[in-house]
Length: 116
Length: 115
Image 1 (cartoon, one colour):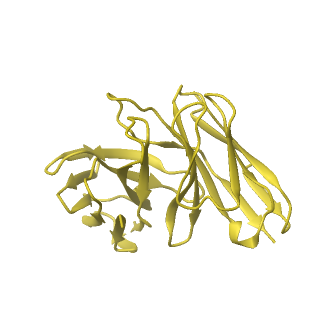
Image 2 (image 1 turned 180 degrees about the vertical axis):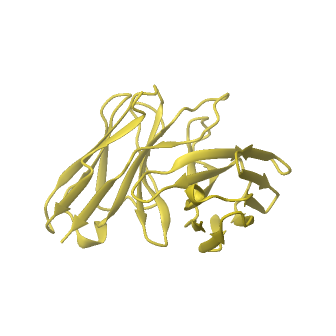
Image 3 (image 1 turned 60 degrees about the vertical axis):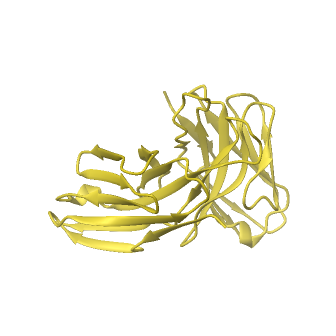
């Protein structure tokens, strides 16, 4: 069964204290991995897509990396405004052999709190 | 552009009542999705519509129905609400095709409580 597991569940950081979030997956034939940011009371906001092992993407203080079994979201010198829940999701193809039949399977998320 | 919009933002129902959650997107996306989000369980797919005129079940479809009204709109209906359907519901849309990037864009959510 395809599974996506995120760790830790919660992470409390001091401003400027760099850290990493983990997303591990057991899917047959990964087609893509996505990172989202979700603020309280809002919908998830797209951050990155990674398609192949070794790929890296960066945006401000965030850097996402991908291996064959897991992805990391590195937060460098975080600020209080980086406080949010970070979700990862893997791309799964549906039963039909059509380019438009696909779904995302989400992990439960990591809630990051950055204290000033 | 408004992106993905959802109505209502909040709703309280009594067990057995019915309601329809509305979703619309203005990005000309072909695919649309309905998710529910519960504490500690992440987003779970209820139904999706890969393209206008098609709908398919996701991971947790029981107790729900959907209608893809046109390319812009995708509604979710609860025929007889149950307390287990208390959740936050998100609609999402995505472009699809050989050169698309497959990421999904989410609406602000509907917070539903069933008493």
